[in-house]
Length: 282
Image (cartoon, rainbow, N blue to C red):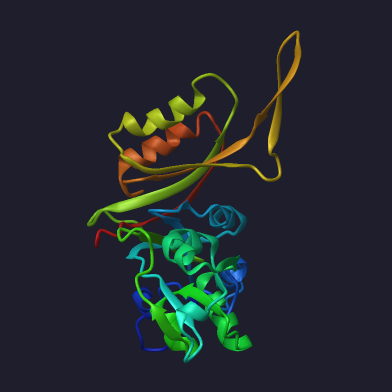
């Protein structure tokens, strides 16, 4: 989802747009739209408490020169949507994002429908409505049903009721970090190969009593393998990784600055993706 700032109005609350973040542009073009000044901010789902990390969106964070300026954690309420007058027993297939389909496995298995992957849940609802597919449903939000004129055939169909998705808010310019409320900082870095190097990288935070709330590793796309020749028996191949970390400290705090300064001593690459207030509503 992208949004445009309207004169003399506050930015619309994210909460009314659950899973409708691609109503006008696809998920792969959201960040680009911010860079081109088509929208002011982008909202990117980054992880789910059931399905885990959304890896392609981690790749987008590195591909685009945008800044994380906020996060929102939202309870998921998946709905089964269909055309007006259609009953769920009439459906032969259901469209949605792969994670949404996996999170609703029990009901979909009971219905005996074919699961079909879509780029995102809102896009799936749009396809059903636009193409008039009476034998096809979509797993999406109640808001998507309202927007596209679909019936809600079943509500809260997720297997796990404690299902939360974390979204990141991206903007062209970073916000000025403060210390008046709990902050989180997101970084990405790479390391040289060697024994204990990752341990040393994580230790720079432990030494300063900084809690790590998220650690994610992703192979580098442009350099997926490294060759290490450390014996007379030939070369060994290892994956070359990017490490994404979220830590609970503001960049306005000296301990965070010292930790990153220490990390730079043995990181081949380091980038701060953003420093932003933590969402503590849940």
